[in-house]
Length: 153
Image (cartoon, rainbow, N blue to C red; front, side, top):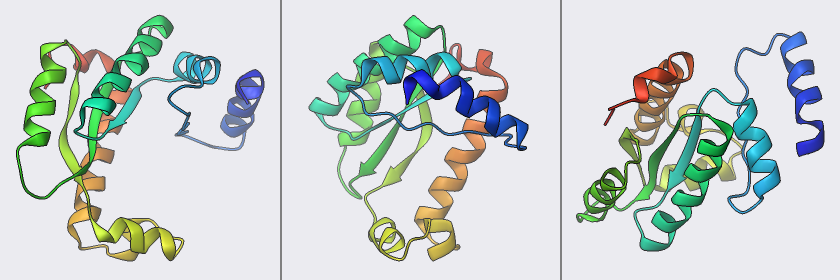
């Protein structure tokens, strides 16, 4: 896919795509680098665990190499406990931008996937849908104006 990415993106734009989301495996370095070079913003989902925190660094390094701003977003966050706050502080201490809000570990995500839907379709008024809406708003703002990430939360 990395070799065809430019052609795929050109075709998408020619057919009216205003936004393209590219999901790469965290360890597929050539695909991730190609995607980061084509991106306005690299958004790195991260669970609040030590293994994920270490993996975020590799994604940030790829974004830096591509010259593209990057931010982490915490996902699958437990409803209780301080893991997310501790992980947030650890990433910020290492100079990583963290998007505001968190995506909780919610059954709605599982049920929506099982139904072949997004959470905003499955449960439009639910907490999961509000979390995704907030992330969408923040992402759109920062993809259009990536310089806002400097000094950001």
